[in-house]
Length: 379
Image 1 (cartoon, helix red, strand yellow):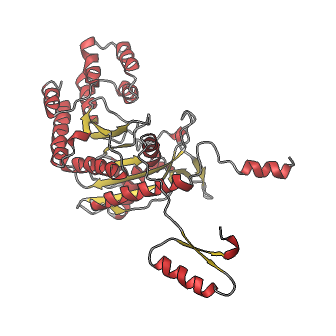
Image 2 (cartoon, one colour; image 1 turned 45 degrees about the vertical axis):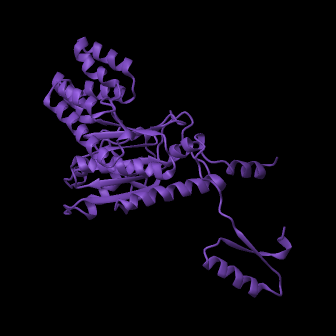
């Protein structure tokens, strides 16, 4: 094989962590996206599009989003550092602050597009993922939290997923226990990382090394069990170690009531140890799980301080669906709708081209996918 052929062969391959999507797979993916978008629109959310890359500071450590080492960074001609978005929420927050700074009424936005993660420990996972999501701003109520979770549930149902669970927690519960124990900020951050990764053995070792007694360690580690009913939450509320932790559990009770009013409480459970790598979350937090994939198909939470980083003081909550992870689960559950639509074929020759073209145009106007082909290609 000569150099030109070798070069051509190399150009056929995509970089590590990205891939092509075509044929029946792309049909199924597009159909799923359409169904989810339609469901989100039914809740009154409006489409919003932000750039694929932003200034570095939009995703800086101070914002509490993706670690700097996991960002795709590059420079513009003025020397400014730019990054491909790893996460939509800070971009939507920036956009909302720019165009709706003085708006006090609830704002509902939805989005879809690619997010990028430049990390070397993904173990074969994609570095470009397609995400859909929604953000509800200027509403601090439990009703807003419940709406976001209910809309997420109905979006997953509309996509065809039937067996899944939304695990709901509250970051304030963890912060309440840290406050109760007077925990140092660095220790709190390290402990949060271990618990968010469900590495409870490492979390206990960390607490031991810091000199915490067993009953103090148990405040963090005893809430690993899932709770499914309002009665479970009531017990956790009664045993909360301080007022801050108690308020966190009470908020979960209120959110349960809202989701139950939607008739969707069977899809949620509660996990007081649920945390996230995104430090901008301030309250309710949730993740959606199903079988057929080891990763959450959806996630979200409340971020009441994030917009203040862009000059707007406003509470907010959002959710995100990972389309790639969702499709992986749906394929393994054999519930994918990937039947490609039929394409009408109309053939022509030199003498009947105009007549064939007229027929093809009428077919397209009637809503049928139609191709015009020379008779020489007739099967």
